[in-house]
Image (cartoon, one colour):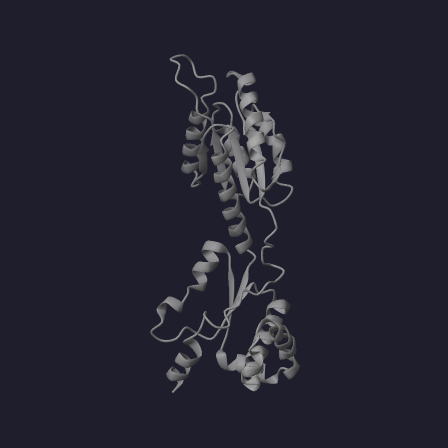
Length: 284
């Protein structure tokens, strides 16, 4: 009997009453990713040429819908990189973007990535093969930094493209948006009412894995406890939902009002719980 009840209560789980309920902790659709910007190079390469490339890259970055933090000037040594850290750590970042305008050893990149708690993306610039000395050798600097970071258990994403290439801006924008979502997951709380129905394993989840991978916190409540909570709630909890749907659905009057109000009361309870507890979503 209990198993049958669980099937009935869980069959439409995560399909009906699976609400993406907006809370204070949910990312605002209009919020922009925050990208920390650092530029590294060496004085023994063609600095004037590197500055030219940098200015083009900065123009291209205007295509990225994000807030950039950090001074866009070339850092030539570890002291300059250390001086840039306070600005890059003044507020949480979604992504640290390092422009490798010339070759440099990994010292500055290691210092920046150790100080800034954010995923790392690097941008290097291609150069034509002339048979002579490379003026920038930018890509080699990214390769060296990636190896140094891998030795320390860290990985990077990277873009290798011309500084005026719009596709480079697109890759950076995509990486920043993804990183911003992951960072916001770390403060996300979810509520799951009941358990997944027997035989519907795709509906199951691992709360521990969600916490370890994304930092998502999951609270759980037994179905019976939730039902008793709904019963005890005032009937007018359904009023707002009924009024709103009377404008949205032209056939609302044809529905069983008692049954519909019960459903809307459940929704009202879930909405109130999300608001009170800061849940970004609730699954029943």
